[in-house]
Length: 175
Image (cartoon, rainbow, N blue to C red; front, side, top):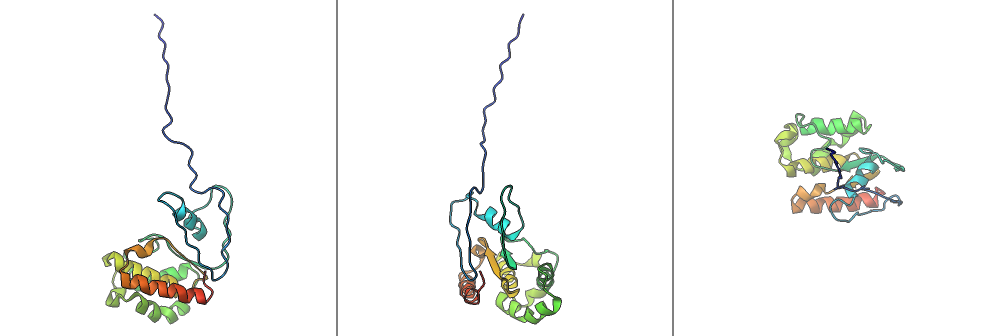
């Protein structure tokens, strides 16, 4: 007896490019907004610009010190206090302890989380967390600020405060 086996496999996925043929320039002090449906590559592009991800082809050239708010939870050690996390993130950005200490009161005031600055961030609400993350990012006086939906969890008053601060940063030449 002769047995004939015929196998086929249906391809359920196709090649997917999160980004393809992207090219743009943003000048000093300019603001760029990315708009598109879920899965269109917005976050991927921002991660590449921040250096937390790399492109499989091509290159991104970013000139300037970048501060990023990409996702809630990124960049902070949950066991560290708010103060310790601000100092650690400044050190990672290459900012001296003296320089960040000189700005710390301003960062703490902008965050508006009171005595929680001395508590581990794992005890923070999502709103408190984003307040501190935003205050720390802008308090480091970046040349480029990248924000990806991080303010969506903040209350409306804090969001307005952030948008006013965006305008101040832009007037000082921050991109």
